[in-house]
Length: 396
Image (cartoon, rainbow, N blue to C red):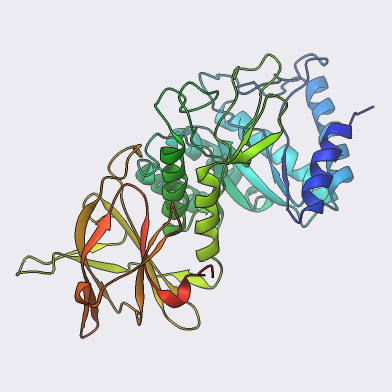
């Protein structure tokens, strides 16, 4: 006998609002010997009885929600903390076992493999080698990682190296940042709590994480919609303030936070009408003979990525200082940029945090051949956009 009432409420409410929920298949159940732990960092079921109980539960859950849920993730952060039970091979076998049940009942399901905590390249390599050797890579639609870092731009190299490993064993598998967020205050529950966060630095963090992932063709999620009040005996004892919406102790919504509007601004602009420009070139220093050429994403202490409208060819570039943790200030510095084949007719400057749109005076930009030059553009540790006005949905 399973009590589905609490989960029915969540799934049905999400579906009624037009959302597409995904469900994760962790954790274990202590009523069965050797059936795994129940909280973050828990070991997986290992005993015959424990695995049989887990398999029955997964089967019942998929049968119940197959008409409403198409995305599934297996376990959660098997390599979390100092866990020694969930070896890469045990985790891979467990993923195969779970995915096989889901696919048998729901062939069209999209299943996320691994759900890695901190990025451990040896763990990833051993996990995917096992899947490859057992001919199981095709069970999965994507691979997820939950790598919490204070500076959202600091793990690009590790993610790139992880992607190379995945491509070696499971070419074509989608890379997905499956869970990430930053608190809006210090000493809150969960990851990254020991830093002086504010609503402003949280909003900057989300903007940079979303647009850094987008610029590197990584699917991205925001954790979470609302703050969570944790209960029970798990490792997180305080309210997790990573949510876009503030909640009270009864988990009721109080108000949207600054990050809510920031995420809204990002998604209003970067929809499926835009495509990333691979290797979009940015030129820096427009005066004198010291013009330097940099590729997207690595312009000295700046991240720069380019996109164009698939029909019109009009472009938008994202720019931000990426060398440090987002701060609780808006200290601006002026930079000069040139974009090859810029695709601008009427360029404007957009602050992603506030959603403010600014005119770029005629004396601040010129066109020379196939290069658009911009002079004295204010940048800071949160994304600004140089965009053709036609790509910005202006509120009247």
